[in-house]
Image (cartoon, rainbow, N blue to C red):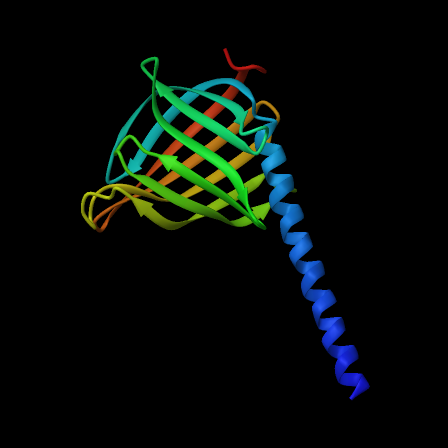
Length: 176
């Protein structure tokens, strides 16, 4: 009987330790995203079912008393997409306010801070006009170094897939 109680307690402690490590990883990832605060510029390039390319700017800043990071992606001097990154318990989440006028919600499924990679997986979406309407189904973020960033949006439109690769370089440390 005592050995069952000991095993149960050890199991709870192990689970709690793993849970704390997950929370810690997500929190550290959000802190790395907070460090992106400032103005960025670079390029975008679509591949797959959709093709296009051109210049892209971005701004990053914190909101909600430091609890969230806002990303504005800008073409032709107007924000075309906004994403908000935040913690939800032990999870790092992202809501993307898309130029397609829908709002996919994603969760970081894989975080490797040593490699600077955060991969977000689709959770659900609001305002999707039709099941085959274009929408973001994933995001790959690569924090190359403090001044270089690569973001890849994974888009789905029916059975057609596209990737929007955005490469950015920091130009200012504080947004204007």
